Amino acid sequence: MLQRWLFFLLLPLLLAACERHHPSVPRPAPSVYFWRTTLSLDGCERDFLRHYRVKKMYVRFFDVALDADARPMPVATLQFAQSLPDGLEVVPVVFITEPCLRHAPKDFATKVAKRVLQMVETHGVRGVREIQIDCDWTGRSQAAYFDFLEKMREHLRESGVGLSATIRLHQLSMTPPPVDYGVLMLYNTADPTHPTGRNPILDHRDVRPYERYLSTYDLPLCAAYPDFRWNRLVGEGRFKGFLYDANLSDSTLFLPLNDRTYLVRQSRYVSTYVGSTAQSDVHLHVGDTIFVHESEPQEIFAVKARLSRLRPELHRQVILYPLDRRNIVRHKPANYRHIFHP
Image (cartoon, rainbow, N blue to C red; front, side, top):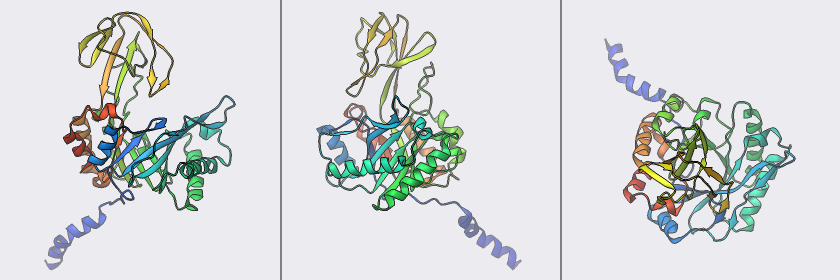
């Protein structure tokens, strides 16, 4: 009888000892991604950083893509037009396309690390304690990617700099990369090129298939949520492109069906832009459909609540992607407070 009582008394302690606990992200704080090619913040963006006490900014420094000779080369390098606010920890981010991993030279990791550290020194960027790599790697590129990360981590260790990486939902089912922690990307959860009206920015139905991997994923994680808008053009049964700066209030060109769907009324070519960079023109046909997608706060709240039950420390740090005045003015302050804090 005494043994049975002792068993039931000790059972909660035994269960607690068996429960999986994951270490958290180093120095967690409300954070944002900055993903433009010119580093310049307007008054609204600076006020946002102050008001929500944002202490970390993940800043895209450059991309790496293959040139015409299939060599990995830096592109879209960040131009420093301003200095960043004092007291802000800066995390340089490098986006690497997957094909680069198959054509990378032996010193690829060293070159990337040196270029980032040189930019940090040249532009007097203070508070850099880590570098982050963003790459949509798959099973076929995993070995090359992990080797790249190991070499980069070894090089950065000499400078006392850590290494983190983005983690896409499909990568949760794979071996974690050799980094200090990962940022789980809870945006672009579906393929935007599918010619449907479903929101590809964030939909809880697209997250759920990967939830079963979250509690056992053996890497410290934090979460990144979306704060942006897409105008997707669909016609002739296919995705035709993004209309980033389309004036949908132009009734001569667009017919509103509701506040999220428009039909094209006239055929013409329109220029599209990403930031200040011109992209290829898109041809609008009469009858094409434009779906307007936004990051919906209620969808973020629902996903956040569900994932917090599966992995509580996931939201000790939350990152918004990206910092941009056009997004800030769309939401109420209460929404941002709910997103940033547990």
